[in-house]
Image: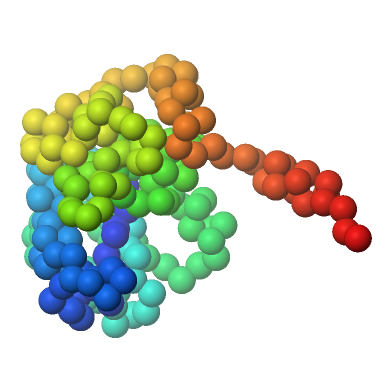
Length: 204
């Protein structure tokens, strides 16, 4: 299982998350999804003898060290490995594509992998006013928990969602998410649509 980190070094340099120069909530509140989810995900992996890999988001070596310490604080030091290499974007996608199962919170990269038919589990924290974009699929209206996602972070929910992904055949999975991909994010291999659009632009 690959977990996509949402760690952002700059956030931890402040006490509050701010938007448009307004204090929204404490950093502790903003980042609580990791602290709640990671111990549960680690527990599930340990019980099922699964290797957990965390895909780091830090940019430099100093922040990578801090990111590893952050996750050690969340889940301890055993049964997981940290991966974050300075390689090209293509190579990074190739690495991610090796994993059959991906877990994330509100990662755009998670949505990109979902669009590529990868089995992705989304565990979203509840809305933090004035934001209402914490639910999977925003702005498309979705119920708060479904086959592959939930905004209820508990061990029962982690187990339910991940077991759903483990048990469903890939062909059934692709059919199941097809309707939602059209609403949320579509993968256009080779960027054919944007290239066609650009080629059809006439210049005066």
